[in-house]
Image (cartoon, rainbow, N blue to C red; front, top):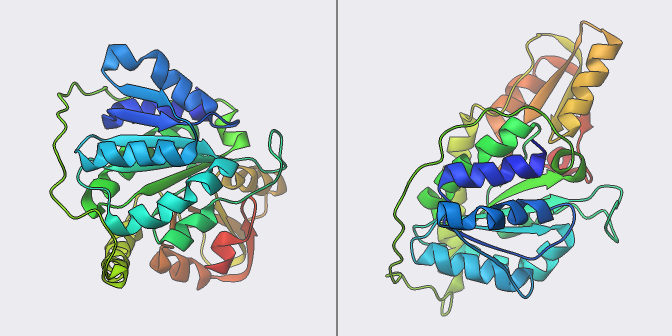
Length: 291
């Protein structure tokens, strides 16, 4: 499967019932696949007017208790950001809301090389970065679970070389479920007193940080007392793995981070303690390095 196919299948396995998107390479295939199987699996799928409308529609489904996903490319995240920076405070209700954004390093089909991970920090919402096709699939149910528990959106970020390359993926069963929409009972407005909802959001992200600390996705180095530790995320981790294999140096190892916001401090501090030098490998900006 391609990375995009894996993300789409992960949405099916997660029990997503609503998908709203706007097309843009390298993200388009995710929604196209879900659209093609929407009748078979009883999912509502639409191409919206733009990414902001798509995210609003998906949030509406989540407020009504329907697990929802909104898919876009990096430039589309700018269009959706107005709503993203409000729904983080209002909350997403019990359905769960996943935002999949596919960035385009080198701008193969884009006008810039935007790093959309910065929106996770700006909005104070969780961020996940798969590095393999299997992770791309498996992270979608995990992201939905996090969103349902915390009632905030969760971003899954892919990049072109993961979205449009392929590898083997093991499937799980697609659950059979009956979805019923219910009117939300909570206040969805941020005014007056948005500072109180901001306070609540900070507590939510603090609780997510505890979950991320014990997440099985992050993989620390197997060697101790390293000359060089490479800290990497996304497909850059695969590049780093290949480089270390080619160099065949005993005292070089990698730390793979998948839960990249909030940053898992314990595994980072433990890994940094046993190395002399650090090299960061990430696309495109020094997001993890800054954290």
